[in-house]
Length: 89
Image (tube, rainbow, N blue to C red; front, side, top):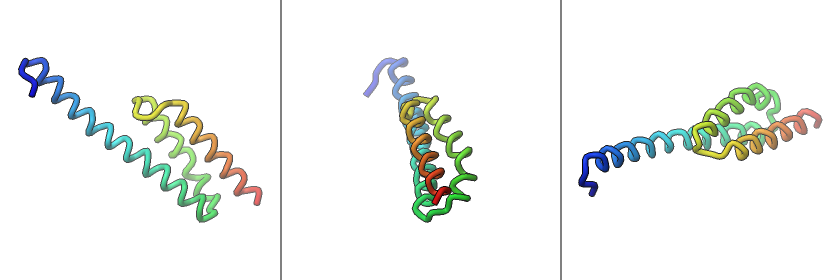
């Protein structure tokens, strides 16, 4: 248990930030799952319309540091490539 006043504040702040990060990670995972569902169903139209929102969500989460920016960019790139391949077929 923290004893000093500053340590108590820091522990409380860490706990609050951890819960915020859990929420952000949940949003990240749900966005990935939603896009994966569209791609699995072969629904290129819905995937294409969801792509800007997906991109926005991933980059918002990446800028806070929950996931790496390069990870977010890689996911966006690969999913965009899959959507374009779906449209060709």
